[in-house]
Image (cartoon, rainbow, N blue to C red):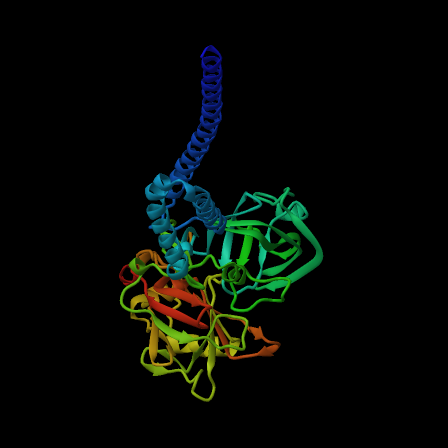
Length: 457
């Protein structure tokens, strides 16, 4: 009996040891499992914070942010696959994250316009001679003229010593990419040459990572004697594939809500603006009248079938002899062929002696398709006193005016190598008519500016 008891004790002790060892192993396994569960919970909470910070109802600021957001979603999806062994985690997170994924996918597929921008930039009226706005190139600030009559971006640089006086000028940055290509462009008041380069071009919140521009190396004429640091070309067509206009670069970047640029020009020093990507409905009255631009020209050009002085047809344009009207934000006044301007001035019957008949002078009207665009004498006349010339639209009392000047002058414009019956409608015209340059639909839109009423005395 004693031997049997000893054997039984031995077996019991052995079983106790086996169960003890099994318990240790199971405890270790459970601890590992709990640690894994804890790790998943921590990851889930971190990612959950990320995903709920995505502003699905707002514009996302950049394509990089979209990619980052999509990666977060993919990270969630991968995590969920790992968590399928833990049912309590699936119930807690699956439904909400999948819902968020569906929202984001729908956002990408149907509301991509929310990612695109309509950027407004303030313009400053420089004595009614030209308008400047602020951009950055290589994170350096420049006050530039946005010029729909030219095709490229020129910026003052330290390559051009005579350009640098009283101006901002571009200096080399870490993000600069220079080429060995030079470009030369003839303007109405001079000529510019520059070195084709690439750097970050910033227009408000819009950024071109490798924006193409020219560092000015030489200037001829009086082009940069005024207070601006560069010219930003917004022409309808590019000079070449290597030298695209800023408008083309913006269109190709896909950042604009629409491939449209519009101008609101104010007669005061402040208040003017250029809008990239759309229009500002608060800046014009009525509906915008759109006209197809003449397609074969580099400029933003409208076909004009009649120019009237008062109610009289001047005969300068007709159905068989269409005039070309270039709408140009880089020109201050009106221009036309020399002979045609002479005919126009003769029909105005302007009184040279003190401009006594200023407010009796006739209107001038441009007829485009079935629309008429009229400017009044107080809009196209510049008056002078003994001491100074009055700014456009601001005229001294009649008794102290000594001279009147009409803001039309003769200029022969050669487009596509041919001399055409071409006129330019500059800032005087664009100040009265809110102007839309629509490259998406190859058209120009015009509407009466909200400041139209203040132009009429």
